[in-house]
Image 1 (cartoon, rainbow, N blue to C red):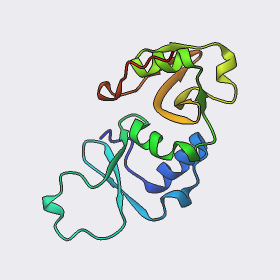
Image 2 (image 1 turned 180 degrees about the vertical axis):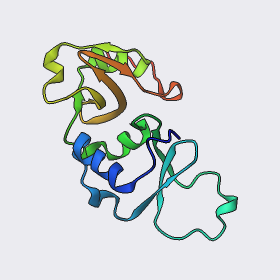
Image 3 (image 1 turned 90 degrees about the horizontal axis):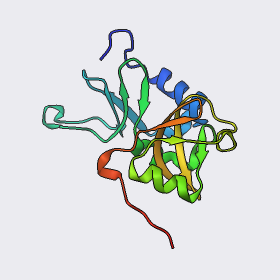
Image 4 (image 1 turned 90 degrees about the vertical axis):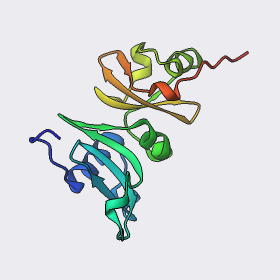
Length: 152
């Protein structure tokens, strides 16, 4: 992990509130577990009797290097609670996003969002993570989650 960015629960909770409007109370029953390689997992608050046998302890929710990067899994799970930095897509752009393409969006799609990580949404379905810079969204959807969806 970058020496300048060590894991701090309060900093992560503050980021989630500031960036996505997620209240810290949503995570009261969970702990964050950080690895030396900058991965942060969300897992049970209870103690673990054999930590030497654990490969991962829950849901990978962040990667931390020079910044906090939320995972698609986290955003999909808490998406219904996210009130800030949600990009509502139309059908055409949702299909492009699900294929793994980056998007160049009209500013009408980008009201009430700011540069940085955003939740991509189609009809109240949390699709995943994107990285917004201006009017360009760099697709952050993992290759294993990409779909070729067609609507008739």
